[in-house]
Length: 136
Image 1 (cartoon, one colour):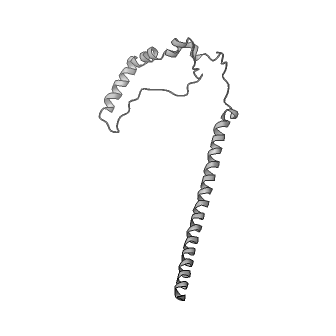
Image 2 (cartoon, rainbow, N blue to C red; image 1 turned 90 degrees about the horizontal axis):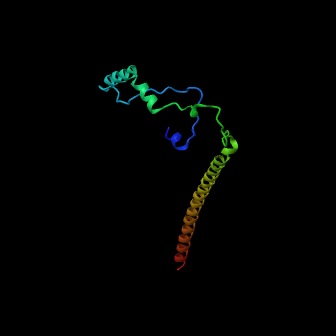
């Protein structure tokens, strides 16, 4: 309603068919002692017409918002071309993730090979030193 008063036009179009019924509800803990009292009060407000009065007062039906004949200039259906950007970003994320996974696997393998080579070189160096010592 504030939007209609401020803009002078309704920027929201209401669906022609009801797709959900909104009732008054209050969330309570299971087994709460207040549940029966609240149910009684809500039922009394509903039967006396207070709820329908509040609905009319605070949610008035604007015919401008309910008409389906309005000009929808600039509006069109969303199609797959409109959603290409997010799909490209998703594809880019998947490719980058896969490349990072492969890179990490290669890095770990190289790290293991280098460790083995270092151990092998170290053992060869020790055996070489032992040979030199035995000659003297």
